[in-house]
Length: 460
Image (tube, rainbow, N blue to C red; front, side, top):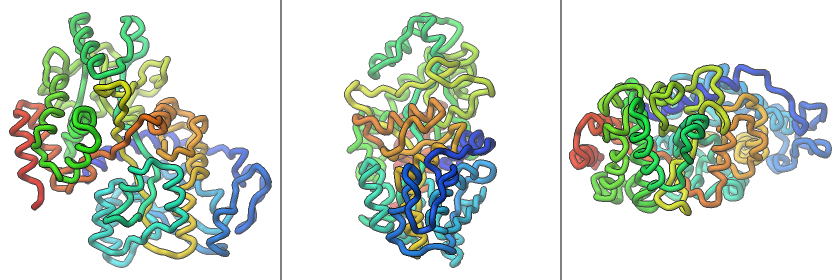
């Protein structure tokens, strides 16, 4: 889906920084002075090879991996596999392609499937399973890791018709509001704990500063223009209707133009369509449609606006030299819910799909679903730009403050995670009429007409 391509490109920008630095060896990596024996267990304190012995003697075998992540951003992934390769003797071969989403289905149908693919949307996984029949169910060892280390919702996103195929890999959090800690301190503003607090703050900023706006936003993204608006609606659905209604909406068990959806869109409109509140640094409400999502939050640095709702990967869009930290030039707070005791979290991620059931492939799937891999990947990404929803990930292994914040959000006991809705809808809707509908809505189309337009496009 183009939206996911747009989002992934932003996430890739974040990972880009990590790919440009040499990866330091870590104390618990077999490459750090502790020899590992393929098929055996390394010395005390080193990477534990024992979980992979059950798959037999794998020395001399090969596993191919196909992803959308290209050089140099691929290097942290390649480095994160070293303990597995040294333990097992498996040679993991990486192939990254800008044409991944267009070519994966073609390759699978044509008999040229990779052993493993990193799939960025549950919707694409569904298509691969149903249209090709070539996706192999995940082994029991992988399923056990997912049951142990992930919120149950993640296993559901990697399942099709009740069968578990793909373990989650990386993740991103979308329910954030970017702001300037320094400006908030100077103005005496506090980070809001509830939606009412957020609206009160919005109104106060509008009254206090005649030369700026409380919010800035951008829906522009080339052919994918409109996707940031879908995120706004999805976040509002989670807050006003709740996770259960959100699930029914995404699955079309309630129509797209259900009254609950209208309530959610109007709540987004209470900010985005009020000229007193937007669009700081760019113009009127209509300017949101033409302002790119990359530019959307930049006026926070120049005083044009105070807040910008965008995902964790937006950290990559600040100018070089910008300090992204709780005491820095910019930082992010959780987009509050109606109730401070509730914490719905909107996000995205990738999933590991296999097209072969050889022992070495199963062993590698199991490694990628483990807490050991999540921590190795964090250590292999020394400049940040990556996080996982794996609860075995040790937050101290993440060097980027925003990555640590994301991990803390995902691991919060109150957090109720839901995957980006448009990525799970039929592509005609999720990457088509939903984008267009949100663009038309922000430029003046009424809520009911917008939702009717999208509902009428849903495949029968």
